[in-house]
Image (tube, rainbow, N blue to C red; front, side, top):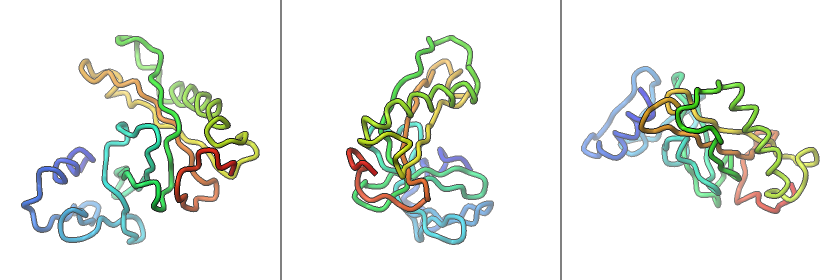
Length: 171
């Protein structure tokens, strides 16, 4: 099932008492039990479309049954990632999709350039790492959506959780 279907159930399926996605063997959190991730760990946070993340959002990502699930988490709670920069790609609507590699390269340069201003220390001296969310081809080429957003996020290089914002922490 797609994240859209999960979101549809989340907001329109309150009447369902129990629902399991057989392919992933998970139970949706807004029903009877927690959403389970790899290894049986509970998935924490509200499932969202990752393209809707905005500046200051904290989030986790899980792969369950081959599907990427992104959850928004209050920054005061343990989380894996924090969005520190958002920007639209400079391409005009109607321009051809540049490809995943070109989008990731542009986004990584953007994220690297904004890192020190957010964290308070240059990337090379930090215990954090950067990541980028870029527009998928289907959203880029859709005549109505024409999505061009790029989001930069930070996470701990060792994979341990963050608690609170890392803004000006110099970690």
